[in-house]
Image 1 (cartoon, rainbow, N blue to C red):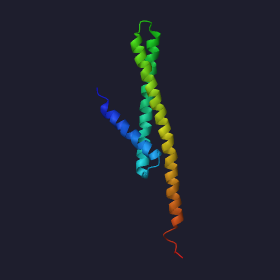
Image 2 (image 1 turned 90 degrees about the horizontal axis):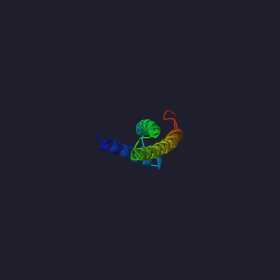
Image 3 (image 1 turned 180 degrees about the horizontal axis):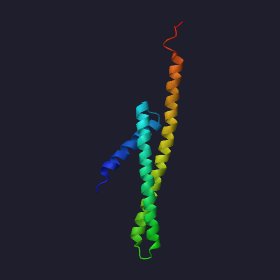
Length: 120
């Protein structure tokens, strides 16, 4: 089974998350969608990491397990750990950026005043 479409989706998500965290403007709807997608990415990565750690534990318990298999699983665990760390950092950055954008929006509307009040 090819993982290419999922990798392209992950790359597009990571790219957009990085852009928004770096300061690009995003709509409220996009912020919510990014948060949802990033949360799914984090949960999927955490599940894959847990499964890889379980496989590694089983391989380590088997004295006949091939060293190449153990090494491959160690590399997989390391890669998934880095990916999970990146997901967490981007989600934290997205949460910070979301607060900034919402605060700016609220400030803008507070400064504009009520459309029902007469202007001086």
